[in-house]
Length: 302
Image 1: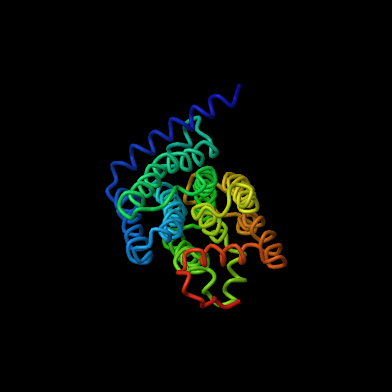
Image 2: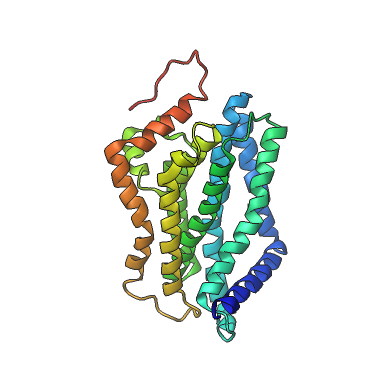
């Protein structure tokens, strides 16, 4: 069966990628210390010693941890291409699919312990009440750690240089941070920003995690988020596989960026649907109000 060798190749590459990553000090800093810094900043300072607000703030930290692979994998793939490492792999039986799958799988295996550590610290140090809906958290974290790396791999496929890759990454990353509710709660953002946020992939990860972490809903309550992330993962992986380049000298097809946009179709459709029924914004408001003191009667703007 041809599938068996491909799986073996992907798993072998996954182990190699993990060994290389663990030898890289920059990986340790960005994958461990930066998430812990966000944890103590968001939970330690913004939760205001309120155990009830810890879970809500932890959802933002988990989102940032999961989305971090978007930046890392795209830069890594471009670096491998510029250094000629991918050209060497081309001489082996390894295909583009196995190479890309190993990137996502190795990232998942190494990021999952960080997520568990964040839960443990939130519970032990900040006295988080409960664990939220565990199945909902696991589903969102798993899909998030496949969707955002796959989107990052598309960026690496359509850019020619490291400078171009970093520029696009920064623009998209700041959009994820500022529009999704990961740093500033969505309900307190201006109404027009909230409407724009409905078309941002990160919004559905953040909002979904806030819902399941606060215990307001389970998997059934985040069905649209899970569906959008799952479909986007499949599309993004398929597109990145088609656009994959082994050599830096290989030109990007003219229609590559149009193909890359296909991965965002699920969020475009979901954004249009959310604009019409206002489900996500209402849910985000309820999540936000659930951590406010009962004496606080101030309502965020509509």
